Amino acid sequence: MATLDRITESLLNSFIEQEQLQHLKAHEAFEHFAAFSVIAPKLHESLATDDVAVGHGSTPGIDSLAIVTNGALISSPDELDELTKSGSSIDVDFYFIQSKTSGKFEGARMADFADEVRSFFQSADVHASLQEAKELTTKLLSLGMRLKRNPTCHMYYVTPGRWNDDPFLQKKIATSVERLEDTNMFSKVLFTPVGANQLQDMYRAAHSKTEVNFTFSSKVTLPKIEGVQQSYIGVLPGSQFLQIIRDVDGDLRRGIFEDNVRDFQGSNNPVNAKIRTSIETSGDRFSVLNNGVTIVAKAATVLGDDFTLEDFQIVNGCQTSNVLFEARESLTDVTIPVRIIVTQDDSIATQITDATNSQSQVKTEDLYSLLQFQRKLEAFFATYSEPERLYYERRSQQYRAISTTPRSRVVTRAQLVKSFASVFLDEPNRASRYYSTLYSVLGERLFNDDHELESYYAAAVALFRSEALFRSGVLKNELKPVRYHLLQAVRHLVSGNKLEPFNSAAQKRAAASFATLLWNPTHSESIFAAAAKVVVDASDGNELTRDFSKLATFTKRVAEEAAAARALLQSESWILT
Image (cartoon, rainbow, N blue to C red; front, side):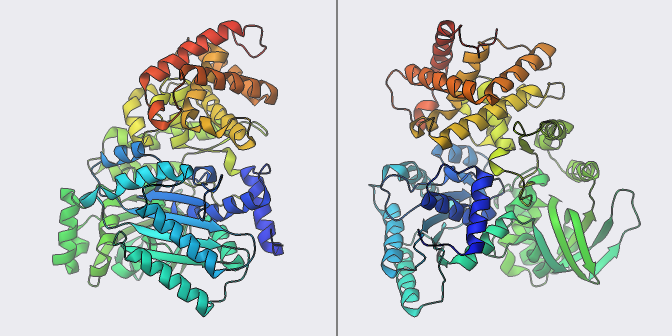
């Protein structure tokens, strides 16, 4: 590995510490560092780089691969199935990364990288580590009219060296891009060489709070409101509104719609079709035909008409914003009604979100993320001190700009739903579903206001410990397709198959004891080793694949094998009675 400059080395070391990747070899850590720097800013959920690393084994040319649909990372055909059920159109981006620690941009290797990417799309025979991504890709490309456009293919060649626009290398890149464009599979093909300076900027951007600059001339300042630092109402020209909803690459900032509750319902949705029509036929009257957009920000700097917003969300107007983005070439005469509220008070932000969404036909279940229960969970997780501290990410990327927060200890809503379903609801076979669909399937079985919080924390601890054991190699990668069944087995081994009601004091005590055992490193390794044996025995010799993990019969067998194993392990100190 080439000697890194001091700044890159410092950022890499910080990343390794935050992600707890000390067990990786130097070049492997650099691959994860590059993947995080490139992909994390494109997602509206936190990124675990293990989910995109494909460079292990003998994979030639590709170290990381991410398939991003509508701003979310998906890794299986099952997740795609759940996404397509929503009826919305799908935006697809492929991200391929090759990381070299040599410090040099080598034309032959850059060309080889692009050839491997082309082979991934055109060849039926791919490396085993790419097989699942290949199956997902095949399914994605068969969606036809469900795709908003042909996918975009992004290739990043990353080294800690210096990129100086070498004409020979530029020609190599152009040839590689042209060969992929000739497949007629993509709306756009991009090859980005990333040197040390660019990598440093990208890593910092992945940590930065969302910040935008725009000009807001046609506005009125609202009277002082308790708990609100600043508030404005007015109209924004289309060009200035795009400054808010697009990132530096011109892509839609999908993460700013998290608090709007509902995802984009698609261009073919009747209401959205009417919005598009009004833009194209009555653009100069759009501001009186549309209810507009409400933005809630944590901070704002205002100098005359020049605005800078930090850490903001569009809490009402997701549909309008998405349609405006799709029609961005037709916004010359369009102005958009906009309200901007700046407040540090989360309860006020929630009231604004609730009120603005309640004015439209938003279903009650769509507002689950706004319930006080979510805030209670966040606060409850914060009551624990190191080394038992986990961070519940109630809002997308809320810990992104806090460099002291180890990302490996951040638990997203999706992760909590899946782990709780696996540990306490015996539904690990459903955990591969797109999490919003999984939530709707589970319904009132989780996030009930009267539930004690210890069970949710315990499920998060089980997930955290399993991921740490996978990273350290104690748990073998072959078990990853059935990782949620491991969580099911762990609970059955430790606590048995009987559960008390989640609102009971008995379950509160049991969950707290369960979490305490898992925090003990010796107990944890022993418990997960026993759980791994249970899962393997329950498979009856079948290959542990994602498809196999979906079988309800397998889930039942895991519970049965765990009960039998528990009976034989009564002498273990980690058995709870």
